[in-house]
Length: 433
Image 1: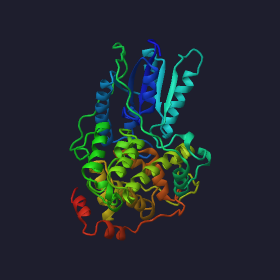
Image 2: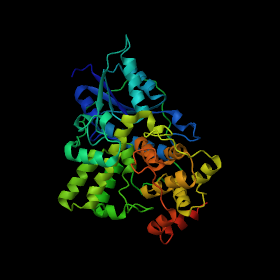
Image 3: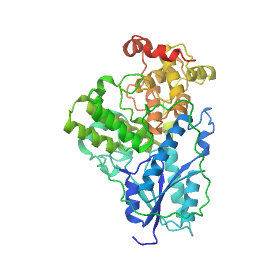
């Protein structure tokens, strides 16, 4: 390391300083470093599905998480720049403005995220470009790809054989500490387009008082694990529909990288060592494995995660009907459990895992609609939108993805009798207009 080294860490879905492998490596190789987050205005523009990539709830959550991250970067003697524009272009402009020698980022499975990195690599390899050292981290995942017992090309396309292999043969990552604090320096003359934070969303985000960002993630884990011991009954309660007691509610923090899956796993093992190890504590790890599976599948299959015929290349018989689609979006299908879930989503940015399965099953089977429209609406509305999990699960329910059964339809009346027998959830949300 020399006094002339200047590093930039590109934050994307890793809004944390603890267990951020790329950030830690950057701090060890650069005398000074800053962080940057780039908000793309295209995320708010409607796409071919008449939806946007990011709705108001997720944008508000990320904005609060960035505020927390700014404070944590400041505590390291560094700074977080939050700018707006096309991500790859703005990162390259910042590298040039700072005369940066290093760029670090965390690997992410998203198709567009991978393309952004490829664009930067392509630009930096052109003749006359600055010599920038790239540092890629893998702390968004439980396993580094080098530790997997198969190549990505040969990984199983169904979950059970994947789980058996990684649990038996793969080595889990251990979480890393945050970088040591030191004084960074930013050229105050840098003029890049600044991101204007959104005004507060009317009402409150469905965070139950927990703040966004790394601080909120750590507080939620302490509460769910240690203060309430609710993790010990997770398997029995996880199919709830409303509230914060039935589930860990860590998905929004994981989706934006406010906490790493390895940190969650380490907290599970710590709890098992100090309190109890049972089916429920394992089941939370089981859900982390599902996330890992879909992310690796997305890297393997790329754009096929968005194709109508899915990774199976199996053409569904459904079609688009704008009227039915809008009724589903607005919670006006006539199926009470589905309508309640959709109204909850529209009002809060949250829907339970059970609810997501029911509304997706209705979308595909009862309404016979093109699953891609439903996936796009979820992408717009959910605070915890995760591209691989969202599109992987929608393909699964549509019979074109990783489900070996190929046709998973839920009996909505039976599901209502099982999970909302007194219709409390339905009555609560159907009263809202």
